Image 1 (tube, rainbow, N blue to C red):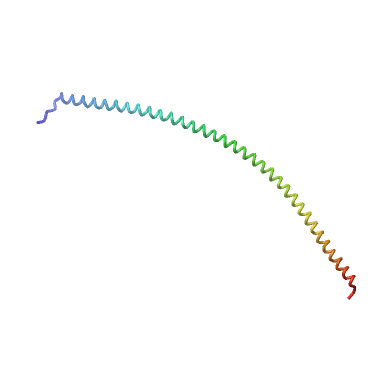
Image 2 (cartoon, rainbow, N blue to C red; image 1 turned 90 degrees about the vertical axis):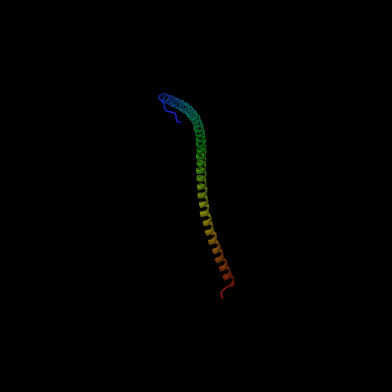
Length: 128
């Protein structure tokens, strides 16, 4: 047989439900507080780590700046070496011109000697 719902029983049920919801609300507040605290700790930890990463990047940037300075000095040295090579190339060009002039003279002398030798041979042999 079913029991009848009296006002007293309904009031007891209502009070029990209210206590259950109060307990759930309290648990949710506690969970929310713990979650917020954990998130706050996590944010603080992440911020600290990001600061360390930023510091490392700054040190890396400083190193790259030093490397860039070294490369600039090396580039300047190469430019000076290139200038020296340009001067050496100009000297070799002048030497090439001098050798070409000497070769022309030697060729002229060779032809003159052949012509002189031919004239001597022709003079020695006499007319035909």
